[in-house]
Length: 74
Image 1 (tube, rainbow, N blue to C red):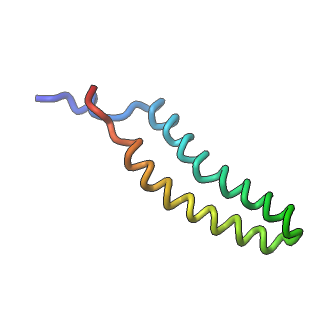
Image 2: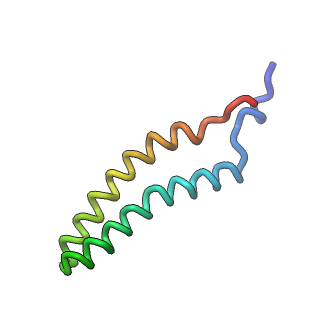
């Protein structure tokens, strides 16, 4: 019988990997918002561009989180 506790992720692993995923989601959306706001000089258009980038990054983070949050046997 295997011990079910050894198969779970530790709290520090979850926090570390969650922070990486949060960075993957937020950094591109904030950067695209700031660049669009600087170039276009229009807050509404920049917010829309930032929101679109945020949802695109969320789609990628879902795929990345499925790979990151799996406990591997080592």
